[in-house]
Length: 494
Image 1 (tube, rainbow, N blue to C red):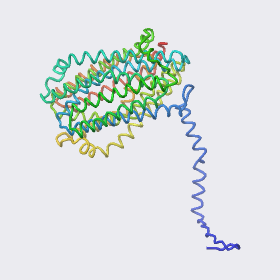
Image 2: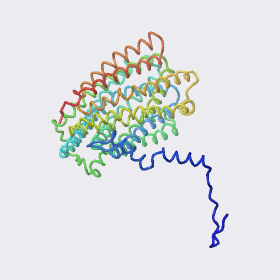
Image 3: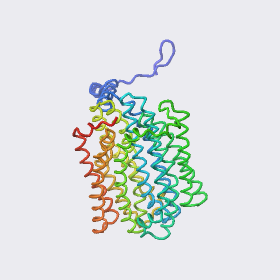
Image 4: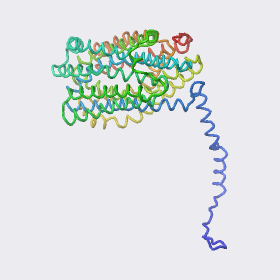
């Protein structure tokens, strides 16, 4: 230590050798200054994620709540699957079996609500704010009414439906399945209201509000399952009670938010009951083709589910757990797909085709990157999750790992083109084309090829999943060809 004249000690300085000093100076000269690096990042974001209707900050604000929403929905569903698995292989098989029917029906409500999202987004993008609340009210009334009719019909004919689709299942699985189907149908009206309200909110870019409503519903579902399934050991019956209480709680909160809290949509209760048929027709222009697409698409899934049911209870359990893993990997990309509907819808409403193309292209690349990251995160945790969370028997471990690896690799190049591009096309009004392509690809490839690989060639459930991945590639290529053309954005619906 060297003392200064004032008596304060000064630490000795370190003088590097000439070789080290030369290296340091070279790195300083070759590495861009911090401001320059920030400037390049800013330029990159402006080039790929900024346009007239949105900049990258607005896209981030739109996307983050949707990401959290999807993470909670899929994560909580995974947790619910894990909880019901503690009630036995028969319980998880019954829930997974009936959930294929639930997904088929609920996807119709979501499709109709997506029609509302597109119309609301296009009115918002065009600057016609007076029509936004009318579109939102019409979406809520039409979607909820449709759900109520479907629920009544399904509850009336639940026995023939179960016997037709799953008659080869074990008697205990069938009995539990009937209980779960009845309980699920009773909740359809509630979830339809929530989906319609959230769709309208996403259309105007209020993803935080839709996130809040979704969290209320899904967190209530998990907490009630902890009570009825885990603590009271009520099994499938407890799950049906939970889903009804949670969905109707979400519906009440959604209506209260629109009437008492929201200041932009300005929806009134009387507007929901006074349906504007002209507006309903516009919503149905988008919603019905998408609903038909979902019916045939998820109907195809039900057919493949019947293939799996015939393979036995272990095959059903393998499919249920594999679906949970696939959903977990898709969380970031599913949120991007939802955001893309709002973004492209508002771009098309403002007739800004260049931005609609640019955002779609950028989202595709981001989605592929997300799949790489999620696979890298989940792969090391695969065995602890399968054994600790799902209590999977040793007999299905090899099939579970094989399905995970095949699906994880296939999702990186194929999922985004197969599911995100049609979101952009529908947001522009090109819903008929997407519906026809999805219908044909599902039944010509996933069903027929799944039967050949899974049943005829005896590859079992692995063959069925391979057929699904191949179908992604076929329809993704067709959608990409459509996106490269001009017809998809020339349809005017407002």
